[in-house]
Image 1 (spheres, helix red, strand yellow):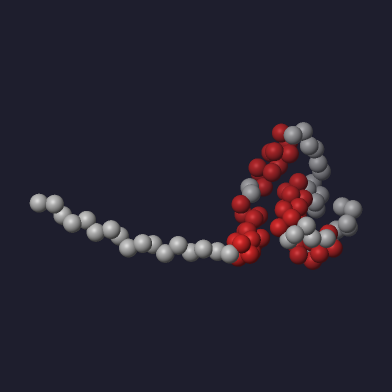
Image 2: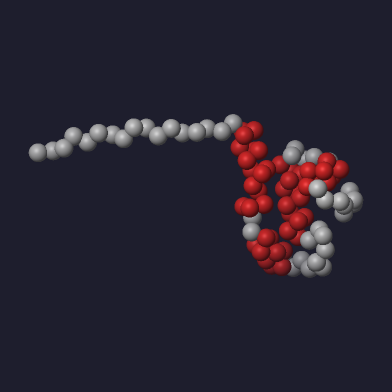
Length: 89
């Protein structure tokens, strides 16, 4: 005798709007990229740096934050990240 197989109820799919997804990415992007990976990639590409406030990891994170905020001005970027550096840095 065959058992009746009942399909499971459909799972609810949560859809985020683009702005909601972008807000989520803006809050968590530093967790998604391993700092050691950034440093290793920079070394592999032949870059050398001194340990300063704006090393490769911070610079990449700031650049991504700038892009995620619509290519915001550096003055606004300083306020977003709470760091103090010049536009030329």
